[in-house]
Length: 175
Image 1: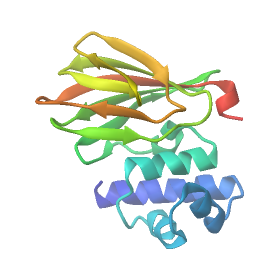
Image 2 (image 1 turned 180 degrees about the vertical axis):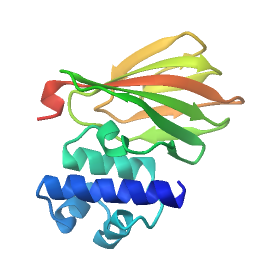
Image 3 (image 1 turned 135 degrees about the horizontal axis):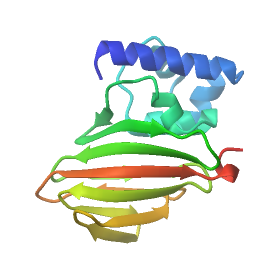
Image 4 (image 1 turned 45 degrees about the vertical axis):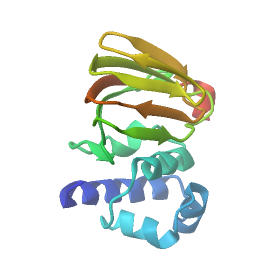
């Protein structure tokens, strides 16, 4: 992320935390990161991983999309780039993302909030995706829906993969 994006993310993260009445120490402990690292993130310093952003959103009890919504740039690491396309406001809450994954990339995603489902449609390339031990290989036009409240993976082989992802936060997942 560039400095402007980090600054926007940091300010937004701090505002969400303060609006929820959560201390820096509480959020850091709940998300499993050092308080000093969280402080630096809020100051626009550092480069958070996707997993760190997911854990912060989970601890703040907000959809990932709400945390990254103010960013015009994609967020990513280690060959995976994700950009929010649209953040839903209905019930259930549904967010849409564009994701691009470099060749020879394995991304192991942590569990999301209870009840969360993910639906991925491949636009180009091929990807192995799904819950650990229950994955499927998808090619362009194919779609898979799975429980995202369990650990899951995205894996490419020799080519880039581009996908559309919708994440459905069921009401019980956001309470």
